[in-house]
Image (cartoon, rainbow, N blue to C red; front, side, top):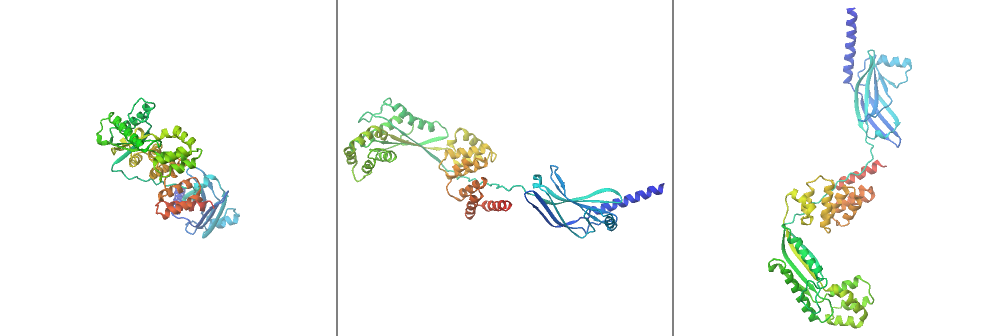
Length: 468
């Protein structure tokens, strides 16, 4: 009895020893090729089975396996590599499984393609069986990570940091239509619409004067008179009315007298010409020819308009000339600079007009890139600086990150034709799937040394190759 137990233990030890040695032995794979069509997956490889280290009565089963971390699995057809005795035994029994002694084995299998395979792992599983009982899993060797996911363009956005301003100098301009009694230069605040028009000027000044971060540097008033009447009298009226308005404003505020400056235009011929060009009126071409004839003195122009086109002249006096009697005002001021990101972020929502483009950029760097707040900051910067190419370019990038392609296109229309704007237009085209339009723009950007353009072109190459 003891002898039988000892014999069984020795046999078990020998089997375990054989299995342990086999784990270290691997079948080498060469010439691996994995291709897919619309509905099939083809796997080809050459398996070098010479180093499997099989015992004469044992067999190794080699099985390619497709699997995913989510648990999807497909076992491809297996092949058997047998030891000498096991190989001949299988031949005598006419076993149907592909059977080999070793050497170089050409393997090929085609299976139906399923969507889960697009990112599956292809591995080679090896099991061994023989006299000692059940199959033993010896190894699972990864061969290839498949990637048949649809290729899409992944953008890189280039935001431009605006140059910081040494002095934040700004101007606020407006136009007021202050009425005066005929041939008079004295202001009556309650006369006709003067209450409303004088309030415009006060509101403009108050909007900057009441902000502790703003210093008013200058207030300029320029008065205009309409072209009818004698030139000399219009000079007197324009000059005197502008001076009266200055004195009115001076009486409201305690600014130093050096803050104020005045100018006047005795007859607003430019305003008349602009109106004629923008509107339709009988005899417009004739009226324009006279109004733009600077070889004539102002009084001669006025007389010729009145004599040649009396009906049109009467219409101009009644409907157009009142708007040519106006005062343009400009308030020059400076705003202090802001350096604290927290304060700047608060000002984005409370006083965005006080921020420079660089300060908007600082605010954006202190929120999550691509967030709604990030987008809002650049959108507000473009609203405050509508003519800035940098502001519009950055706003376009933020809009693209949010998927707002229509807004991005609107901003890019005002972003200029610099290298970064060309690159951004290429990004927009690529994100919308228009790779044909994107490629020449990326190529142009690459020639202009935009750093990310070559990588974008490589992406387009990969997409086109994948879609062949």
